[in-house]
Structure formats: structure tokens, C-alpha cells
Image (cartoon, rainbow, N blue to C red):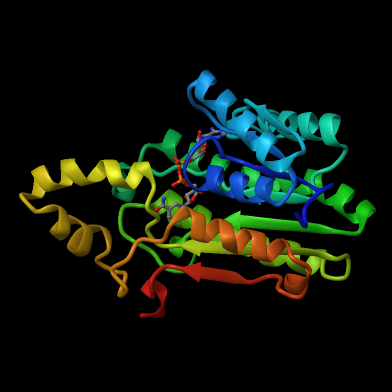
Length: 261
Ligand code: NAD
């Protein structure tokens, strides 16, 4: 339990990838702050399980990270409870798919706010306390779309490219302070959100399940394999170890070779 005594805050951690991160960090003894939306009873069950696994503590903070106020409330709740955030994972994100000339302006604003600006707010608030303690880890869940584009995803691609730039900038500004900042950039990850798209796509395109997986979802991934949330969580845990202290400013792809092409 090498993270005993440390506190990890993961944005967007009531489901999917963020929840896998929270579980992996709790399993190493960290206090955990989870955030996001969902069924209150389900979230409370997850929170209790996290506290039990860590032998430390876990809190849930229900704030909307599309606003500056929501980001500040999240960080304040973490500081009030634990004093500082040692491991900050900016993971909350959303998507909308439409051509640029039809892209709803309110969707653009929300995606930039959640996928990009929330990481700026949480980071600017977390870093002074990391500096005081002389240790910190900041990790962004970016995407293959931080390195390459797809049509009809202008807000998501713009936000993820900018997030990768933010991570590099933070890495330079904290380079001599025992703080690292990196991006993890997955291709398609096997989450309920992805799995749930399969039946509709089968119907819409008159395809088998295998065709949808290989020819639609994993079309651009040479390995033809989904990344698993637990695999990304193992990478997060690795980045928190002392052996990863000199890995900073990097954008680590976990995309089955997508961006190697
Ligand atoms: P998800 O939808 O399962 O989880 C998103 C989380 O963000 C949830 O906890 C949700 O409640 C929370 N959230 C949504 N709006 C919020 C808001 N306004 N304020 C606070 N929290 C909010 O998605 P996921 O697939 O686990 O994605 C997590 C991250 O991984 C995202 O940044 C996404 O872009 C990135 N990603 C996902 C994939 C994939 O294939 N699933 C691939 C590449 C990158």
C-alpha cells in the first residue's frame, strides 16, 4: 500500500475509467475523492467500498465541473477533509458529434468547460499545496483525439489537443518540484458507454456484433482490441510510483496503434 497517507482526487469518477482509477488508487491505500453524476445510492455503495479497500477514507463531492464555481467547490471540499490533493486526475469528459457548421454552440461551450477548463481550475488550485508538500502527480485522461482528429468531433478534438498542451506546460512549470504531469491517451476503452452503442449500431448498419466491433468501433485500431479501464488504472498507479518521477510532460498512448499510423 505505497499510497497510504496520500490523497487522490479523480474528476468524473462515478463510472467508467475514473471509477477504475479510484479503485486502483484506493487499493494502494490512498484517501480518495470521487466526483461525477449518477444514482445516489449506487455512488454511496462505491464510496463505502473505496474506503474499505483503502483502509483510509473516501468522500464523494457532487459538483458540476462545467463551472468555475463547481471546480472550486470540489477542491475546497477535498482540502477541508484531507488538507491537500497529492494525486490529481483530470478525467471528466463528454462528447458531442456533429459537423462544425451545425455544431450547437452550447455543446461547444460545455465540452470546452468540462474537458479542458475544469483541468485548468483543479490544477491551478492543487499545485500550490503539492509544492508545499514537495510531491505531486497530475494525470489527464486525454484521448487518441489529443493527437489526431476525426470529423464531426470539433469540440472534443480541440479540447483534448489543448489538454495535452496544458499537461506539457504544467510539467515545465513544476519540473524541479517533484511534481509530474502527464496525459494518458486511450483509443476505445471497454466501458458501458461503448458496449451500449453496439446493439443500435448493429441495427442501424445491418451488421453483426463482430462487424460493429472490428469495422466500426475498432476500425482505426490495428490490434482490434479494446483497452480495459483496469489497464489504464494500472498505468495511473505506475505513474504515482517513485520510479516514474522522471516521466513528465509525456502523452502516453494506449490506443492499439491508432496514432502510430
Ligand atoms: P463516462 O461517461 O463513463 O464517465 C464520465 C464521468 O464524468 C462520469 O463520472 C460522469 O458523471 C462525469 N461527468 C459528466 N459530466 C460532468 C460534469 N459536468 N461535472 C462533473 N462530472 C461530470 O466516460 P469514460 O468513458 O469513463 O470517460 C472518462 C474520460 O476518458 C473522458 O475524459 C473521456 O473523454 C476519456 N476517454 C474515453 C474513452 C472511451 O472509449 N471510453 C476513450 C478515450 C478517452
